[in-house]
Length: 126
Image 1 (cartoon, helix red, strand yellow):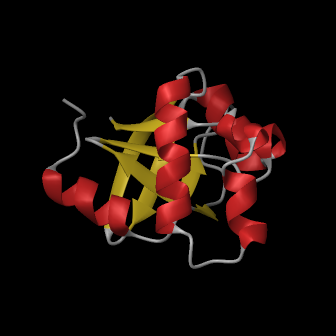
Image 2: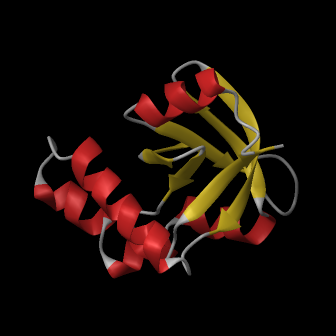
């Protein structure tokens, strides 16, 4: 089980954007960054548009936890690396293309490129 309620999962997975604020090593949280979010089954995933250079991503990988807010749902979460699962990432590529296909390719293509795929993180409520 993912730990998300059905309502939370549906609300966040269907929202266009998510605010992500990873916890910082020295305490507190990094300021929120607006990113895209996708669902796969009972799980939620995010990727960094800037690949490994994304500031929020580097902080999330360093601390492993933070807070997300989307569609009126705010949760403390853990970030788990999901980049190594090729089948999952192929499914997520399809979800990104379908969900965000109405946006220009200049925004969607980077989200399904190898650099972003290498930053795939699963969000798990804490």
